[in-house]
Length: 357
Image (cartoon, rainbow, N blue to C red; front, side, top):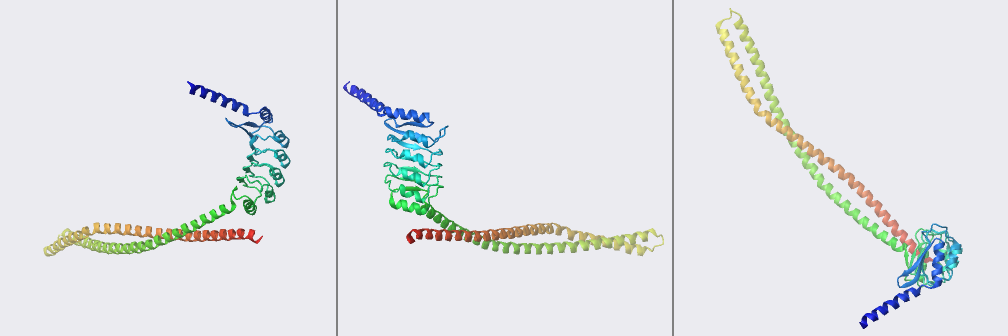
């Protein structure tokens, strides 16, 4: 029972504490921010520090708008992305002693505006994406030792400025990290060169293997063509013999028919003609018997020759394809190597510049 009373008392005091953390001044500030088109709310249920955002406002957010925030120490984060604030407006932020996160991306802020941020003792995050800030403005924020993340995409800040700022604040993470990104790009280019070299070697090995395949299939095609020619020659010879036998039989049959048609033909002449016709018939039968066994082998040899030629043609086509791919791979590997060397040379040049200065 006593434990329950203690818990209820603790919850009551905690709720009271949360309610008391938002001061009347902050409540009034929240109201003004909302009326100006912004959003403002406590950072957490038990943290009354304010997070303020104007980037989604349907009203024009200008330098005058920022005057509402002057010396508001309870503001923890402020988002001014894409608003119409300028360098002059940032002067109103100089007194925001509790500000840790500031979004200025896509604003008209320049180097001069950063001077107003130098007095922010708690700033940890600053986004300058797509602003006109250059290296010349960085000294203004080099003294903010709490700054941990800085975004400078598509701004005027260079690698030289980045290196100078990091020298002043070793714990600062800048995005993009020009040098690290370039080193990563060089490493990736180096890996691409290695991969391209391996591909060239693989294609060369495949081409060499295919070269042997081309030779083997060409030899097989030549042998099959020779076998087909020999088989076809034998068939053609047999067919010519059959044609000759048929012609001889036709002549013998005609001679016999002519003799029989003449009543005065001697019987011995007719008998001789009949014998000749019978012999011619036997010759035709023999020639026919010689042709038939040669037909199927000739057809099979022709099919084998056609298949062997097709295989040889396909092997030659693949060899040409591999040759083309090898040439393209060699060219690509050379281009990648050149790019890699250029990146390394540029990297060395950029590293040397600060030292020379």
